[in-house]
Amino acid sequence: MIRNMSIGMKLILVGALILVIPLAMVGVFSVVRATGGLTDLAEEQLHSRAFEIASGLDNVFEAEVKTARSMALSSAAVRAAEAIARGEDRDEISELEEFERQLVGIGQARGLGEDYHVLFLADTEGEVVAASDASYLGQDVAHRPYIEQALAGNANTGAAALNQVTGEPFVPVAAPVVSEKGSVVGAFAMIVDTQFVVGLTANSTVGETGYAFVAGADGTVIAHPDTDNIFELNATEIPGMERISEAMLAGERGVEGYHFDGSDRTAGFAPVPVTGWSVALMMPDDEFLAPAVAVRNAVLVIALVAAVIGIVIFVLFSRSIANPVAEAVAFTR
Image (tube, rainbow, N blue to C red; front, side):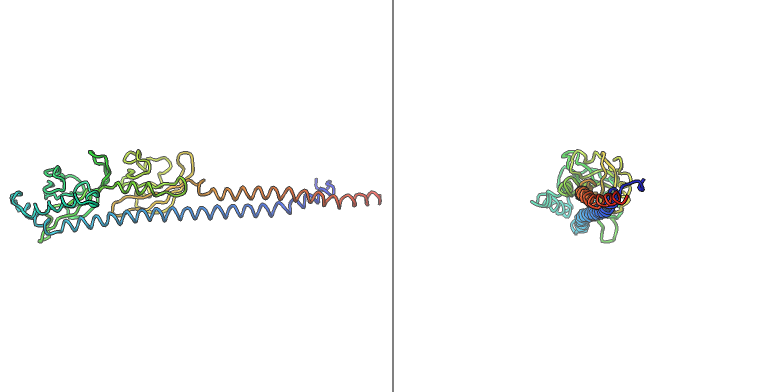
């Protein structure tokens, strides 16, 4: 077929190949490099931001655990719990009255009391004997996991939940009250308001539509920009997020891609060790790859324009050579 071509067509074909092949190579290389660079940048941003949020939450609740331990080891708390353990009349225990005044003072302190739903002291039977809110006195909290752990000698944070009265989210933090002889004589607990966690995730955006959410140790979403999802959605039940939710519940940190709601997305996630939570920060792929798409489109337009111009030039050039050659051949014949 090529043999039957005229000299002019052969020149045009060769010229077009010389022009198009380098343009295609440069275009593909540019798009691949741009896509890879943007993907790496987005993954690093998602990973570092998720870790930053998780570290901030971990520091906050680590401080709350230390506060609970400090309160549990205060002389008033220890003496009050020891007196109750000895069977003394509660109305005559001055240390109990003193410690309860401290709790009420904290609960009423402006800029501090708002951080807690209630603070209370429970005896070894799990009965609340002192509280910042009098309505909690006498309640049986023995079977609550965070109290059980505290009475077993372990300071801990419990599972996040919603206050059944106010509807506000909270996390219990508890610590053992230890006597001078080293035995556990009670448990001190703080019910920490976690509305700030919801606000933190709502403000932790990335790109135009990327957002963060926090999942509890069992996958329950405890903070999300869409408040309808809080304590109603479980990360393990979200289609396409099986691998990510599995890694989150295992306390891992990393970046994973997934398909959700008809689009490809990428999420960075990191654990909050002290609470057993995990923070995830996600972003649609087409959003952070938009610059790569723009580069691809620009390359295609430039290549097309360059190819058209080049072919026109080669057509004119081939005619300037082919026509005289044809005339010479005809004259020779």
